[in-house]
Image 1: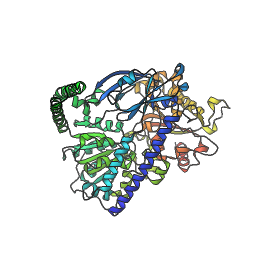
Image 2: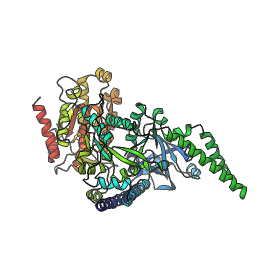
Image 3: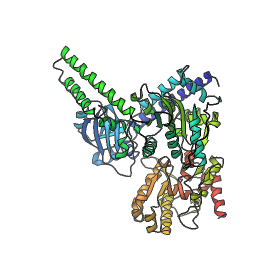
Image 4: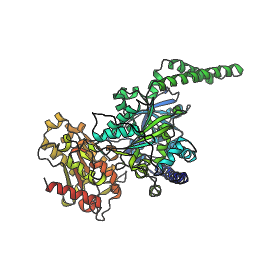
Length: 640
């Protein structure tokens, strides 16, 4: 493929991204104007009411305010480091959020610098604290439209499109063509602690001069292999860049590297807040540097001087300039020390545009979760590197694209998929899985991975108790409990969230789990810590299930072992027992976004030893995928 063709396709990507940007911006505007406060809070997009805490300057010299929420612990929220937010005030008669009057927004935005549970630190422009503190009405905070991420992606695409005669231009033309990627040739290294496909993959990464794709189906030890590949690369390079789409994935890989004794610098704040994670963040290292107190003092003096401003004139300017020079000199020295002492710099894809990385080049960039990232986002870190290693699984969760038009146009096609398509010889597939009983794994292996997955002997026949069937589908269409609203097995729209739920199916899910637990016995569940995941593709069903579990006294001793979440919430996780509530049940055979089969691949591959699927077979099996899954489960049962 010519370079003109690569550029034309990237320009098309840019156009689709512009569509997505406009659609998301418009959706945000409508969401802000028309959705009631109660719904914003239950969706996890707003905190209300807020308690305002202390204000201070953080080590990055940003002015910050600490806030805490009073909330129902059932409500998960979508606030995380780096996201923009806006404060608002609202009148709520009698504390009933459904009765909330008009929301009035403050005329400034903030950026989340830290979140832990119900506590958050927000960096805001100086001079707005009194505005918040003196508000006659209670204060809230909601997520704001993320303009910065889009700006960063547009900028990355423009640079890739405009590149000429550089390494970036070479990689662009290579990725969009069938031209073979270059490789080094050397004898394979042995890694006795890895299996054959993992060992081969690490060698493939080391030999890659331009690009390699590490394809890790569920449970195949993708992170283990990636960490090994990073470790080995560090034998040859002084420093590498490691990125992922989400903060959670960056945390995960960073923690694994730290456990191997690798010195990691995490740009941005971790999602799970503990001393170990915080100790390798940039902010922590910066504030811990021996020169930091001098810098803090210089910054304080600058602020004092600006506040006084009485003694304007030459003397004032000279003094200010001297202090600024000192602050810059100290900052450069501290940064030089911090970056000089680490081997891995870890951040999100958008975080790779940080000013802290200006002028830095890397031999290799590793991109984890590459199958969940928009192509534009991947180009942000690639600009800084000579070769690219992409890790992920394009048969699991795809990137989130809100615009249907942009999705149809191909915005959802990731760089990883493009390379898998254009360069199948650059793909290293991990083939041995260590998570699932063979019967749970087999369907996914046949349908998504051309039957190439194998189970490690130690998990292949593992069950919770002798004679247990590892995989079952409960067809809710054959259950008739009358017309009682709580027990109807039809889907319905509910309440504030306009979400889809199926009350009968939710109740049955918990009844099945209760019967199963009674069969195993309380003592064994608690001693062996048998953990359970209840998954539903629908958020409203997840919230309904959470409420039901709280009401059932039977589950009280086991609550710490049970998690309920959406498919996306379980990405990368596993449990001994998984129950999936499919929700859809209607005469028209409508299954909505259950047609996204990659999402279902994630759901059915979370279970180690037992998988229950609860769904209306006549509705679901009109789709060939679910028909095949249903038939597979029946045939497995017949052959037991």
